[in-house]
Every structure is written in C-alpha cells, then in structure tokens.
Image 1: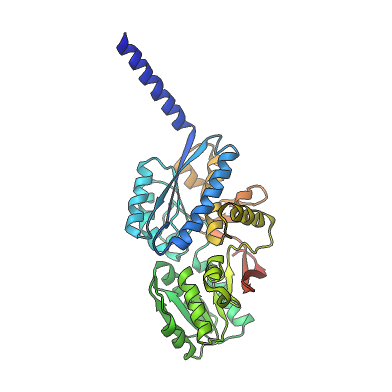
Image 2: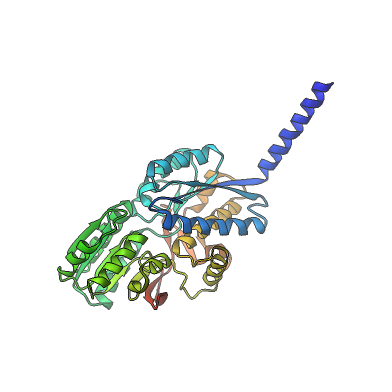
Length: 376
C-alpha cells in the first residue's frame, strides 16, 4: 500500500513536471558576454532580455511562457560551438546568437545538423552564402550595404581614391572584400589597404599609412573598441578626410569610447536609434530606463531576433523547429502589425534580410540621420 502511495506521488510529480515543461517554450541565447566581443554581445543580450520579458508579460508564445537560457561564448568560436550543442541538448527549439561572425560560421553548422533555426547578429557575407536553411540574420550582411556606400563615396563625396582600415577577422574580411569590389566597380582606386588584428590597441602606424597614401576618404570596418581607437588616433594625427563606415562606426558604444573624436564620422546604418520612428524611440527609451545606457544596433538586433521567433512560431501554430525555419524563408513582417520588429523587414530564401537604411553622422556626440535609403 505504501509502495502504491509513493508510486502515485511520483507519478503526480512527473505529471506536474511534464505539465510545467509543456507550458514553456525553451529558447537559448548564445552570446559574447566576456572576452573581446563583450562590448557587442552584452548589448545584444540585453536587447534579448528586454524582448523576452515583454513577451512573457504579455502572454508568452502561443500562451506559453518562454524559458530562456543564456550561454557565454567568451568570444571563442570553439566554445560557442560547444555551447550551441549544449543548448540543443538541453531542449532549445530555437537559438539566438552569436554576434561575432568568426563564431557563427563555426557554430551554425551544429544548429544546421540538428535542424534548429538560429537567429544571428553576425554580418559576414559568407554566413548566408553557405546554403544553410536554418540560419537567419537579424540585420543584413555586409554585402547588402556596400553598394550604397560606394555610391555615396563617388556621387555625394565626389572622391576618386579611398583607403580601407579593416579587422582581420571573418567579419572584417567579408566586409573588406565586398567594399573593395563595390568601390572598384564604380571606378574608385583603393590606395591604402590596412588590416588590423582583433584587440589591436595601437593604430598609429595604420593611420600614418593612410595619411601618407593620398586617400580622399577612409572606410573604417572595425569592431567597436578598435573603431574608437582608430578614430582617436585619426584626430591625434590630424587625418582630415571623411571617415566613413557601417553601423559600427557611429554606434553608441563607439561614441562613448571615442568621445569627441567620433564627431564627424559617417555611416550607412541598417539600424539606428536615431531613426525617426516611434517604435524605435519607444524601444530606446525602455532599454535605457532598464539598463541605464543607450542601446545601439546590437541591442536592436537582439530585441528583433527574440520577437521574430515569437511571430514565426505563432504563424505556424506550434513549437516546431522545422516549421519555424520553413516559414521564415520569404517572410515579410510589417512593424505596424508586428511591432517587435521595429522596422519593416523581409527574409529571403537564404535567411538574408532586406529593410530600409540610413545615412548617419555623429554630431555633438549623438547619431543624426541625414538620409533614409530604400530597401535593397
């Protein structure tokens, strides 16, 4: 009799546990929370946290609460690969992250092998060129923005020679190659080509080389801390030519680190909190009030990624990794109907993103939008 009671209690506990499990949706966020990528990964992760808490406060996904696990890659690609497998083994049906392209090109193979959709912040062109049907960007790849940057240099700045300072990483190589290809296509000469290593602290030789090259503008394609150091060295050496970049160069983190040296920097940005859009302003206000600092495009990407999982899952009507991946291909979401997206966006069959973009300049320590460009 006693054994029956114990067995009955155990069965009840098991049923309660199963019921609790069935009422949650398990998602994993794998991000660079320490190491050289922490400046970007921590902002991304805060954006994810903000979105997940909002989603849960408003009924979750398909009326189930989101159970999100967070993993720190330490900005190490091999660690990130192991953590993606760990997250999948622990039941994640969809993944968020990573931010650094060097990690994503390694760990996305694990997600693909397990049939788990992955929503990444990485921007290296190669990520969506490998035919992986489970990878989806939260921002477009570098190759999408480079034609607009090349046209801006030629048509609006009127330059004929350029220099490029770039990070010698998966992220930097992809952007560098795409930039060089596009500026050459419009007839510009690359007169200085200057790679740098991740974590590089001294940019004096890099800036001097560019200064002596005769370049009429410099394209800066570095990660946040390195971009800030470059800008400070450029001011120190009196490099008085237009400094152009992508979303990184005019981001809040670079402005914070570079201080007045960031003023005058310009970028072609896919995402910016300076966008004249009520949803973006609302997001930036909520983020700042909760975390005590202004978000940048990485925070926006994390927020968008979490909401994309919610919207996609609710479209298919069940927590199903394969169906979520399937519905994402060719999907367009408008921000009026799906406000967590912030700005209208579409994904193509490769998981690449299309949305409108912005020309941004740093003025008096703040991002300022000078022009809105149509989606391509």
